[in-house]
Image (cartoon, rainbow, N blue to C red; front, side, top):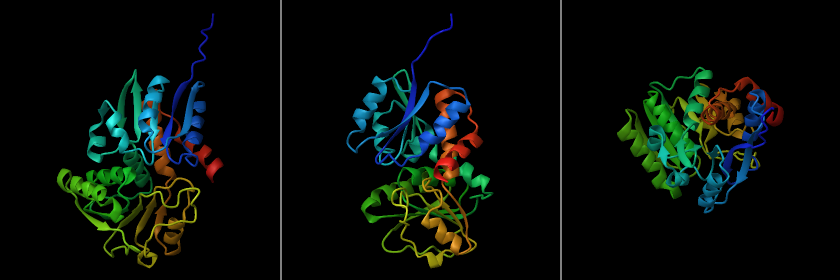
Length: 287
């Protein structure tokens, strides 16, 4: 007799807001293509201050794992049993694996970002980089760029979160070979003439605020600058439009999203998904 098993294997994302997160589109497309019929990806809105309850629910429902996005990537650290060495250095986690109630956390944001950068044929080695934002994504990207040989990294962050930016700069200066500095973000940021790469690692421009763009003096964006956004929805943002208008090379957040999602799926299922299938599904929904 054929085995009957109707138990769903649950994964998903904790975020706030969460409705605009397109992860379910690419994850479930991958599951279907891989023949994982009873794997489900849930998009779950978890209010700040309710993360502990959400983690307890994850364990109670025996979910296989979860992604954490804004604003939970740093707060979630206190609820984990084990953290990867790179996530410890970064100080943030975006992917959790539930191994029979024992929670392991890792950061795949930076890894997905670096693969996207390589696909755009951009090497950070010896380059001067400006990162807008020092949250979970900015921290992961900063550490990965430093480990890849970036010469200098400037962290631009709002003064209200000065401690977060300074802690990232301290990590980069003491734990890696790169040189880093923090610049308080007041008014329109002027991109230094010596910068090679400009990265928006903030949620500015994310759906539904699709007309928003970071406070940058866009007249300082040059044609020889490479501009990268981490926003996946919409794929083409006003930030990138400003770069395009000025002749700069640019890259959307879609590649980073697909790459890190593929890593997540491998961590949860032990199998490699087809990223072309995931990209096709994303483009059909987001454009």
